Image (cartoon, rainbow over all chains, first blue to last red; front, side, top):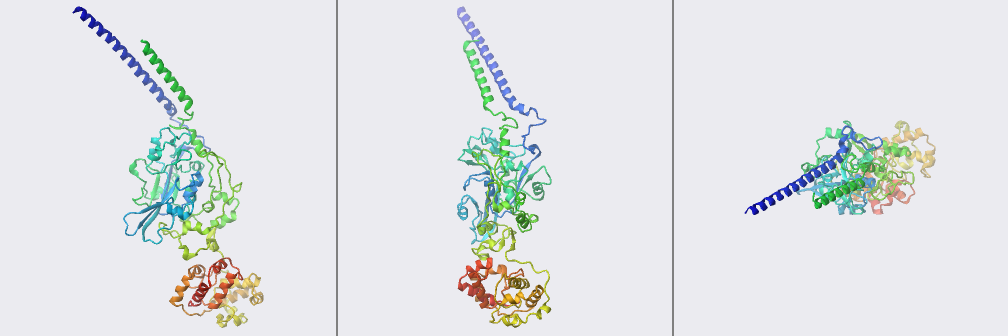
Length: 285
Length: 345
């Protein structure tokens, strides 16, 4: 009996000592992981350390911290000439076919006696047939013989959202929002997974199969950082597209926002778009 | 510490070191510079060379065209309507071809190795904005092309750089002639143009009620030899500029005479394409005195003869030659009957 008790006691002591050791290892492992995580977290922190004066890309004559770009679309002025769509393709070397567009124009036509609008864009086969080429765009006069109750054009482009879902989902940090408010893609980092194309609630992104990267409108970042207007704004003959800096109260966009009652597309998506529309119906989403 | 635990810890340390080394060598140096992305990408995207150069760039060489355009309806910033050079002509710059999606800060700008396109099919071009189409706002000027010009090119009548200015349009003369003085200078005219300027079957056209600008321009053309006619050339050569103005004033002050059209004639004329004629010659055959003649009061035979002279090229005029060539004999008859039958004001 005594012998047995002794054995039990020994066993318990051995167990206790090994449990203590294991707990000790565990403790040091946790401490080590915490230290590693902390070191890891320190790396990006280092960039933010100099919070007083964040670094600015050395673009000649341009300080991105001084601008807050925004875009306005007055659909009551758009005549559907599609010069913006062609100019965008030329300026940004977008593939010359009917499937890849950084900006596009939609037409909403409600015929007499119909409940919903008929919607087409320049990429519609009827409109491509009217232009005779996939590289040139024109709206076919397809409702010429119909009784049209209401019709209007809506130019669309990337909304450069304040909280962009597309940036949120990128697994490699290839798409990001610049300090002046433009969402751009680093094509050398893009792995072509198309998460961002799926995430955009506005269908503003497309995939370039030829190069295996996603692409999108940048409000012509290479132009606006040189003091020029985006190509689509430059060629719009009727002033339906308005672009400018919200930090400048005299800029066309500040005037546009001050003088018009504006709306954004799909505000419920929570992306907080920065393209402001005038003169569109609830059917436009 | 047990041996196996030491091995485990050692392995972890090696993995950690490898991870740190991989991170150091594989992550771009600019990655955390501005945020969770490669900072150098901003510079690369921003360095692209712009292709659209703007109107000021075009003006440096084509100041004549730009000045014509700047005064036109296509440059109306107050109404928010500005059709810049590159809207119709395309971008004046190009970017050096790189691997696609590699950004390029270099390229060519017209005229350096880069030709600009001059649009040839102006009807296709102008229709992009001006064809009547569902969805275009009402303030946009729109036309039903088949009624307005048929298959003709827009530039036949419109100056492409100033579309509100018309080919063949003339400014009204600054000093109008004196109709009373003109009355004494027309004795020679009446033999062919009829008493009171109404030519009833005589070789010359009716002059009564014709607009002054056109009469002055025509007499001046005869006088200078720009328009040739064995009868009119010597007569006009003998006139002074003041005579021409006085005579023009006199004839335009007279009232022409014609019968009203029947409904059938009007319908037939519109079928024959009169809706194109009214763009210059006016809805009731009276032009707006911009150098195009009034057709009201002319005899049918005279209009037929004139249209045939235009079609055959004996009478040169860019717009009328092209228009007349597109008409068949039946159309010509219908149009002539229509204008001959218009009632004078």
